Image (tube, rainbow, N blue to C red):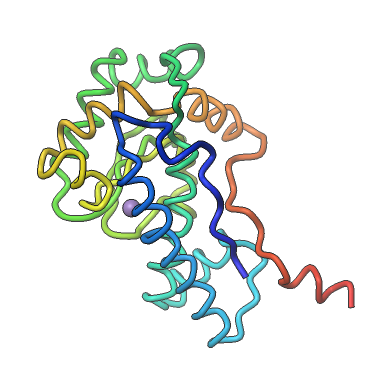
Length: 218
Ligand code: MN3
């Protein structure tokens, strides 16, 4: 069984950029429902995955759409909570250097990230990815995520679904993206992901409890 991870900060910690009302709905209702549905589907199909990551890859390759969408959304949201902090720190170090290489400078990167997110039609996510060709900004539809896609490592992601911003920004996705980038995006987390992409432990969803590991001991 996969657990819904707690937020790494309080519901009100990201105010005024993101209200506690949004965080409560987003974490306790939307994210919780994805995790619950994954567990229900796993029980029904008698699946005992070692990790959410392996389940996502398996569900994608076997075209189990409902399982994939819910597993990927469970992962994306936990990743997203880790991509934000009440204690935001400017972009610097190796991450800033690679951003300069790919986008000219931080402003060029912000413009690209916000434009990609604003221009993305419908629900999805906007990502900064580390690829073999350097850093890229990419958006994905609905629950889709970059795991297992051409070796890209996600460094940071922003939720483009309306539930992520409608309470606070109504239809102004661009304002949401700009404030998110400037005020709450955790560039230290992104920098850690970049370092890990070169040989280390990238972020992973908490391992399922009561799963295969327990049975192996029996
Ligand atoms: Mn969401």
